[in-house]
Structures are given as C-alpha cells and as structure tokens.
Length: 200
Length: 171
Image (cartoon, each protein chain N blue to C red):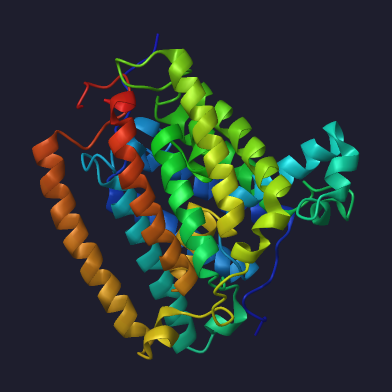
C-alpha cells in the first residue's frame, strides 16, 4: 500500500485544493463582507455553521483514518500553541474582520466575485505584514511566550479520547445551529446575494 | 444585463464540501488549507523588490528570501486555485458583480479606507498568530489542535467587540 498521507505539496495538489476551497467559500456566501460581518451582528450565522460543520467533518474523517490504521495524527501537521501570540493575533484578526469585512482567505473569494474592496484589503494585509516584520524583534518575547507542547491536541490537553472531543464539538455545533437559526429569523437574516430580493 | 443571482448554498452543505476538501488536502499533502502565508510571501516579494536591503536585513522577512523566489511555494498555487474556484462559482451562479460592498449609509471612500485599515490589522494579526482563519481556525481546528481553538475563541471575541463599533458600516 502507498504511504499515506502522500506528502504531495506540488502545483497540481495546490491548485486542486484551492479550486475546491474557493468554490465552497464562494458558494457559502463568504465572498460577501456584509454577510460575513453579519455573523457578529448575530443576524447571519453562516460563519459559525459552515466553519463548525467543516471542522467536524474533517476531524471525524481524520479520526476514522486513524481508527482504521491508515495514518494517525502524528503523520500530519498539527500547529503548536503559543498562547499569547495566538490569542492576541486572533483578537486582531477578529477586529480586522469586523473593520475590513474579510479574513485573508475570504478576501480572495471577495475579489474573485468582483469586489474591489477585497483588493484594497489585500494591499492592507501586505502593509500589515511589513509593520509586523518591522516590529518583529521587539515583539519576539510575546511571539514565543507560553509555548505549549509540540502539536498538542484537545484530547491530550484534557486527557480524554478523541471521540469524546468530537461529541463535545457536535453538541456545541447543534446548540449553535439552533440558537443561530432562531436569531436569524428574529433579526431578518440570513443575507442572500446582492441583486436578489433583498433579504436584509 | 445581470440576471437574478442564485442563492447561496445552505451552510450545512457548504460546510460539508469544505470539510471534505480539507480532509482530502490532509490525505494528499499531510497538511491543511491556508491563505495568510501567501500574503506573507507577497509582502516578502514586494519588499525584496521595493526595498531590497531593508527586506534582506529584516529578521522576519529575510527567511522568505532565502531561496530567491518567496512566492514559489505550495500556498501560492493553493491561493491561485482559491481565486479560480471562487471566480468560476460566482460566475456560474450569476453572483459575480463588480462592486465596493458596503451598507446603504456608507460612502465608497470610507469603505475603502476601512478595508485598508482592516487589512493592516489582519496582516499584522496573522503574522503574530502564525496563521489565520483558514490555517489555524479551520485546519488547526480539524486536527483538534489546542492552537486552533485558542485562535477561534479569540477570533470570535475580537469580531464581536469591534463589530459594536463598525455595524453602521454594513447595515
């Protein structure tokens, strides 16, 4: 049997993964900054619903591959926690999302569906990387602070089997879908594409 | 000239497609999806071109100049694919339309200024966090990494807090 994962990070693999990624992001409505930011006005829960569904589907698939002995989590890239840098960086990306209307991936979907504000957001990101690079050395202490164990997972952190974590995520997702759908009905969401009968 | 756009997919269906794409990416490459890494490389390439000495001397960006072509990487092909996939999808569904998207009470100039400012904050934040909503939130989340969930919680808190200030831009 061929070694799995295949560890093929070639051009074709990148294009294939990217085309599907972009197609589904756009189909979800994630090229639209009004729809994306409506998550935080509690009017449109697509960001929560789509992300949680995708995470649970992929995590369950990876768990099954492990259970059936194809490959385990030690064979794939699992990011390591640097608590303060990730928490502060995450807050800033949330802030940038509310201010600018996108995150990095959705800005590409936004430009690809004709939105010029997405192109300006991308220019801003390049400037933001320059600012970070310029401030990198003074920031190094926070960049490396509170480093967690290499590639630590929630099941390692809590000392429970993976399926327990998956069930807990499923419970959060079901509750989020219910609460979200109720708030969407109350607040006039979810938002449809521009040019359709305006649902907002 | 523009017909009625097709509605967006139900979130469950789009999430299923995205999740299977992510799973396939792990099987093929051994890692997940990303996007901010492309903009880091774009910043290194643009820096190397506009201010070669400062970029080569920079402790953070110089590592991307090592091989000579910072954009020659998997993430570039993936982001090119992302663009193509979203373009095909939006065009086929009648959702492609040139615009500066904003709420009815917001001028185009203000919207573009906020897009630029939000981009700067995001670009900085993604380098500090070592990833973004795709690389840490989605892909890290799928591996059940502590890092992924620290990111997701912080992202939602940051979004809620700043959304209080910016909701008029969109409504």
